[in-house]
Image 1 (cartoon, rainbow, N blue to C red):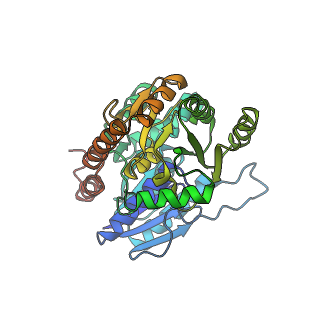
Image 2: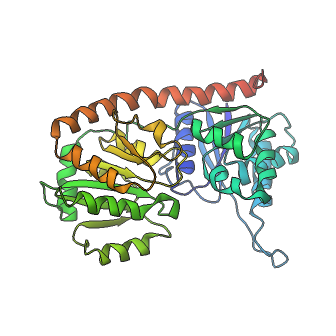
Length: 382
């Protein structure tokens, strides 16, 4: 199979899952072509059967904005024709699905299959912009197959966009050869020394792109409440628009010796293994891939009820969910877990068993591979 993957190359969940999927497909012997503005963040070293095609966007004076969509469509069509692609997988309805549809019209190969995966922002944020709804619906309905990373996102898409196409839920997955509990205690001890965290202190971790919808301030409020009863530290991993205001808030609460800002890192696994608790208190969240990665590394999650978080966390079994904005209950759950070691270990064990069953990498890659084969055989809509 010759597979094209179009995604944003950044550290967001859509780019990460697109890259991990491409790597796994290449490992199965398929030829994979990434088409993006730069090499995807998670791609790293060279891989057999993987090729990258960079989209160069020129800034012509006649255009008010650089014509990314048209340039991307043209590049996709070139790659389809030059490498005789069987399927192109578009991550995001706009602009990528629309670009893929245009690219197929431009290319000589009209039977290339198009599968689009909805990741969240294209629906939960852009879907509220009425000027974009028709474009999103077009991208979904003109794709041969459309998937969503959670049931919650699928239902939101039906409600907001009202496409005619059936949308299939295919959950995100984690590469458990990288994200696991191996050497967890040793890595915890080493990372605590590195950050100047006392060995006996508990650690809470949050990782995101620090956008407003991530409620990173609520993470801090939760930590501040929990700190009243538990000796703990908070580690923020990542970068984004809210980072400066959070640093100011930490200073105003006199928590600078307890809160650690790591920034964006190429390998986050040590910080996941450092965590006793992972916090994801978002206002909107289609899935919560960072949380799932942390869970695979042994961190017990406390999440909001936003979107797909409740599908990842089995409340009161594999972690806890709280209502959006209810940081006091989140703090109470943390105190409960971190002051009762037996309860923590029981929940951690149940969590690891659950996620390895429901988010098994091989099974989810099988789902995508089967969808690709359906497209190639021409029975995608049967």
